[in-house]
Length: 452
Picture 1 (cartoon, rainbow, N blue to C red):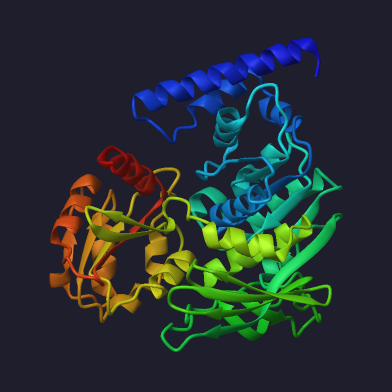
Picture 2: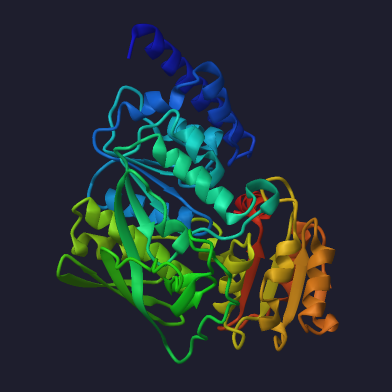
């Protein structure tokens, strides 16, 4: 790095850190302003930070699970006493990534790894400034059609990003035909499940199948379908089929934990995670595969899984006003349906659903009608709806078969949280489950931080 570039870099770094300090003083955490300022001063700021990475840069993208997967990978690596730069709050566009790097980078030092989550649409822009060593793709679902378009459009954007770096190693979900077809021109490493077993207390996923087209134009068929278009697929027309994964998993899913058995290179190891649900089983398997690629021992991986704490809003559990609270981000039909499946309807006392339609959420809320809210038709407790599109959510619940007398509308998010906590019975199995969209989650985080 030339002297002028170094001066620009440290000017950008100091400006970003100062902006971040000011934002914290005025309780405005979570903004991408520091990164935006850094990129304004030095366009190549992200590339400049990456120059100080001693080992590998791991990037993670996909529709669902990228924040949790990236968080798991970073946590596992940190447990090996390596230093990691990571955009842990899930800010995954250029300014958000730049903010995380600026805030966490220690001037004049080097770090071992970078683990960076990237928005699917912004990955190609990120790769203009970053030479990554690995890219992990979790899955591809229909998500925010007003921003991303159809699945093939999103897949093409990711492949365009991959094509910028032929030395990239790509970790791909073998059970997702849209993901498995990516990585042209690169070394491909696959992870996936050969078997999913549900404990008797956990309902098996019944999400409606999603049609996915093979590259020959025919619809994929399935010998096993775990949910949506994820499973063991094949094309009866051209013979295209699921590739046997390099990291093959077998999951046993319980109501409060998941056991995952992973086979790789004729070795088999068993792992346990307190993250619940099938979608989290995929997140954990992906993180295990990435960690094993870094030659991290199974013992260190298991130790890290035991101490991992969920990122805010991603299956995060905590106590608030002596009440049990669980926060689960929702943003598309498949993810929301799988979250609904994890709700224990016998013990959960309250459900708060917060729907916004800001840009980061996606303006189109028609996805609510593709989500399996019919699972709540027999729900006996109160459901509170809030946010900008609270009325839309209330109507959707009524059409799903929920008794209108059970639905309470509180438009203001702060007031909705206050009401839900106040009316939540104080008993051992009482829990408030909050399901917010992305900008509602950020507003919630701001409210709860002030409460603390």
